[in-house]
Image 1 (cartoon, rainbow, N blue to C red):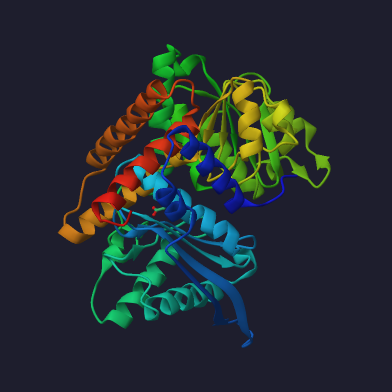
Image 2 (cartoon, protein in one colour; image 1 turned 90 degrees about the horizontal axis):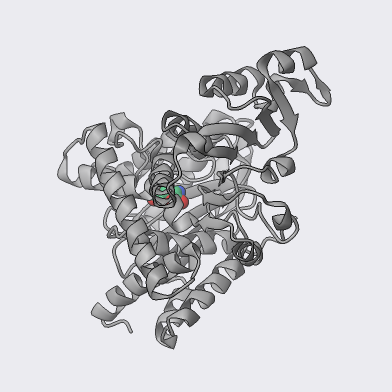
Length: 432
Ligand code: GLU
């Protein structure tokens, strides 16, 4: 297993990129330390009347380019170290796609799967009430969105709590909302769509067609499942997919995408459609041409593109040597550790890094915020056209850095691009 030290990992990559451009100490120092850390214990009532407390955070990393922007996650591992690293990545991510935001991230250290819907609502409201009363959130200050195990319904509860305190409507304080409350068309699948635009652009340069490109997807949550659908529509072959309960692989070619959704629904998990614990329905598997494999085995498949769409640190020193994919697309945040990253570089595996690959989500969040502030409602095609332009431009900007700083990886180039843009903003403000 990987040893979890996300902020240290962020600092390692930051220092590495800084060295390449001889970054001045003042800028580096600013980027190493978040501007504000809000830390509390959030209390909410359980259905049995007991009061539960959970550690809760909002880290505001850098606001030189605009208001803080970034999701809120509810997860047992969401501690301060993790939230700090994710907030820092958000500053760079927003700079890479050149949208006018800084970076922030929120987290509550809790397992939301153990809460009822009413408990989840009370937790969501309590978290946002605490942050709003402390003056953390605001439409021009800090704009959260969904992240791991949070969703549009949770955003709706949080928005409602915020507006009650404010005494007026303020839909732009949160993004990733339901459409009925000011959400944007295209936001639900934007992370996957953005990743796909970048992948297609890269393959075009390599002269590879989607039809000849095989893909395995690790993670079948929001990002992974939408990616499967969109990639399949674009012609890619999806040969293997996993979720937290295990992986399945198609025996003779590629999956029909609708089947994957059916499996997940019928069995509760992809593997669960075929197996109960260790007992598998062999007949069903052979009829569907499906084999079950372990999650680790999925990472080792000999395929063209490995899409990492689950949690951080899944590819680490201990398993990186088994990777056979030629390209890794990081739809999750931080799925490859810096140690593994170095080894992948030596193996000539190209990693399309998180701060570019999954930036489609925050980009459409930006569109949502613009719509909320102007009162306009954009059509879905318009959203996707604009998203494509931004993702393609970011990829081209990143490649220019790769040309200028010969042989730097895409991750290092993305960091350099983000750092330089934030540095310019800090200079203009007279902060450095
Ligand atoms: N949580 C997503 C991310 O990590 C989206 C953030 C946002 O839309 O603000 O990029």
